[in-house]
Length: 111
Image (cartoon, rainbow, N blue to C red; front, side, top):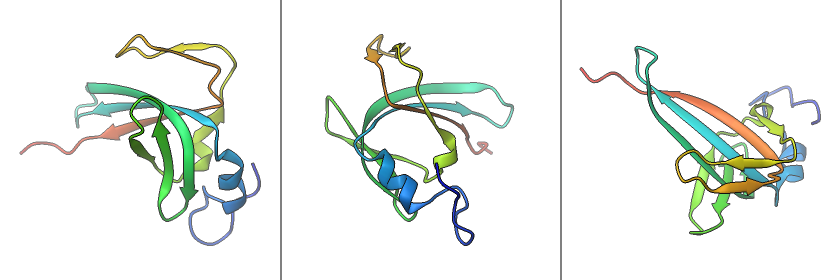
C-alpha cells in the first residue's frame, strides 16, 4: 500500500482504495460488552464494489447481493494467505479470498 495522505484519514488513500476494487474480502467482527465478554461473532465475505473515505468500503455478498459496510481503514485490511477459510456460523468454506479484515466492536452498556 502507498503512503497515506497527510490530511484527513491517515488510514485511507484513494490510490490504495482503487487497488482493492473487485477483490474478495473476508470480514470477521467480534462484538463485546463493556466487561469485554464476547456477545457475538459475525463473519461474512463478498466482493469489494466501492471504496471511498466518505462512504467506507462496500462489499456485495455473493449469495444475496446484499451490500455490507466496512470502515474506511485500509491499514486494517491484509492480504489473505491462500487456503480454505470456514465460516464458524454457517460452515461455509471460502477458498482463497484475496483480503482479510477483523474488527472488535464494543457495544454500549445497557443502563
